[in-house]
Length: 96
Image 1 (spheres, rainbow, N blue to C red):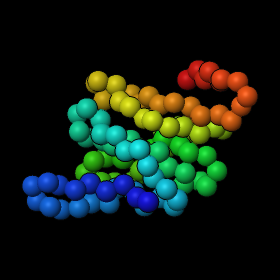
Image 2: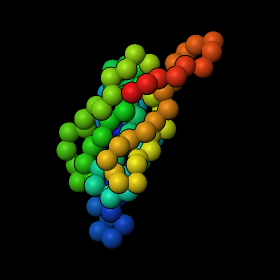
Image 3: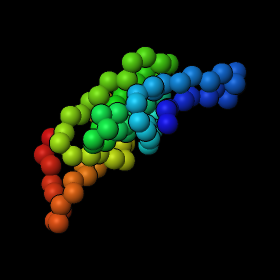
Image 4: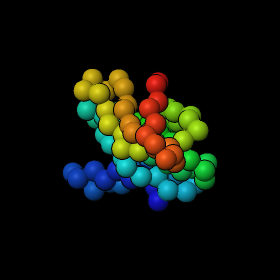
């Protein structure tokens, strides 16, 4: 599954991700210039990526040993926040 953008005015469609495996949970930055999303491109763990809304190469912004989910942007579009997911019997807290 890839991330696509559909322009409501022109009806044009653009594919923004072509990574292997599933790309999910897209979130536009507040300024509309970028989109964050989650991908399991490495087939092991989910990672957070950012791609320009106009297109370009997706860039992995976090390399952790556990998965991530639910990206959201800071109001100024400078930071992406997300939940860290770790298979454990007790909650884990990660410092970034």
